[in-house]
Length: 365
Image 1: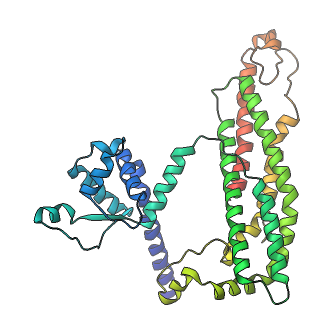
Image 2 (image 1 turned 90 degrees about the vertical axis):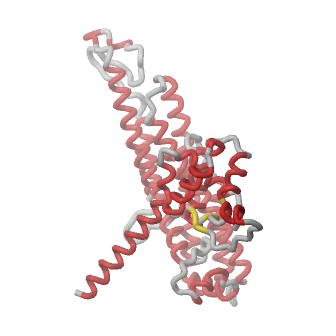
């Protein structure tokens, strides 16, 4: 019974923490969201700085955005809301003032929280390129292949790997892989968005779709070529991985030493320093735990997405026949079936969208 109560308490604490962290996104959907974004951008443009209301008013006045119109009282309310949501922290720095008036103006100072900086950075990335077609960095996959081959050779060498060289190779490897995987997710999400559009006429839609699917096919071929080689390198590294990571930790503990001195402090290691990072990399390229790899999911979903194109445009025969995507209704004169091509085109786009969403899910898992 006590064990169940302990589990419930832990779940409630985890839920409360998740709720608090998600509250950091609240300002992005508030009616005054443009004011909040302007304020957060000022804080994100500083390092370890605490700012007062007068400081912020001066910096906002230098911009040409919505924050220019804020007065001191309104700005203070905005800042207090950001503190409540967890985006800002009240500064604990000592205020030095030469007069009571200056102290009154400067006693309330604010600084950026780690979570607030992350949320605003993500928001700016979305605003900068939400609708852009991001090119897949497929050349990075060749670098991942080469890097893993070098790490496998270092780990298997007599006497073990040089820890500094191994750390450099591992850090580079995971940065390259993360950039590749992120570019893939972005592109496939864009593909799904394009296939859902209804504002393109038949010729525009078909041409655009053909171009994108050619690109998808090229990406899949590259991934399929590299994946077995990368999986083989991972198999070579795997028996040496615990000793390799321990050797690197002994050489360069980094900020991880904080967790030993302060157990309540959570530390996010650089990519590749934890075994979980390697397990995530392996799941991408190899079958683990009875689940197919993400490469396999990509290959299957891409093949399904390409089937409608490879099969050619579907023809209907008999009275009122028409080609898919044919807006002219050439064969639709008999029987007055002029609406058939349009209806078939809608069905085709829905089918294309379903296949694209399957591809997106393959990379989003």
